[in-house]
Image (cartoon, rainbow, N blue to C red; front, side, top):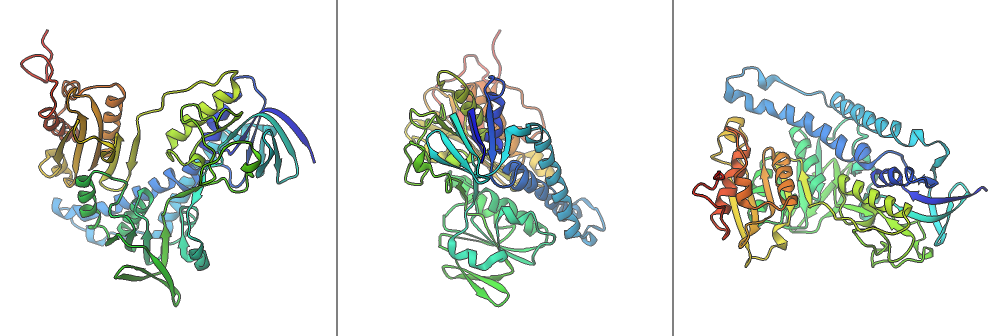
Length: 468
């Protein structure tokens, strides 16, 4: 058994942990990056990147269904080799993981240790390999894992998660997707477009994370064109010979596989946090300040998916940098967090920016909207289903947030996020150029609708132009 003493111990080599090292190392502090399980980020291995690779394959193959209206012959004879497609997705996935490792842990030498760790006192960790590590500061960045109800584990590999889905060499003929948040919708729609028979279930009465009732209604209407969706009832799974029967309310379907996309569980079990000297919430997650990532007034910091706050890559990166900076600094600094941004890469995209609809004060908020149906560019693209809803302070006109389901939503959401970050008003945005014909003209129409409802107007006879 070896004993090591370092300034900072970082638990987890995912996005948050790697970003923590980017601040600790340059500060001149000694550190150990300790990782249990597979190295490489969740994004590269089982999340953002392989899912987008599959989505791209599915979107390109699905595009053939539009070709007839353009007079393109032969599109009905197109077919797809699923094992070859899955190999392509896995090759891309492996490339992304290799790039992460090559630019991070592969270069750390003995500062990177592959082992699980647990606390035996607030400053001391014992590793699975028997080593003991003492650290002045500790960053917990152990990530999360897919949630699978205990009873479902008895069905073995018939129940898939993102941890196992991207290992498939071929796709089943039928799948029930249980949980229609980001992953459920993205993979469910992609599987359907790859000719898998898909049925979707969710206990909630809305899908894709949308809280705006108009966006939620439109999302359900559009997504049901891809596969049947059943909402509002708990799901029960039973064996049906070599298959599984999935039942929710009065709906029942027999499928080859179930994709469980019920969310993720923070990896805190096994850390023995009861020995860390910090206060935990009812879920066993350390209480912490989201602007400093500090756990109480302690020497311990927490970052990334493990805290259950903002399970998104750029947020995990920010949290890792904040935690790493403060773990290496003499004094703890609070940092301003970014304006919220969430993008579901289903087609069309479902996006949330800034304040969500369910957090708005209806007395002080103005709401503008546009439906995509008559938007010229969307019509040309054959993607004119959707709605954009934008929110602003009624009195000042300051932009607050937006929810939408629209083609190119991933781009519009960024523009709105940047505008909200800069504290721009509706009038400020309308003075920006809008080229013709582009999808941004749909946003312009929504902003015009919103501008009519706010009290503060831009000076000048033409709201789109500033007088000299």
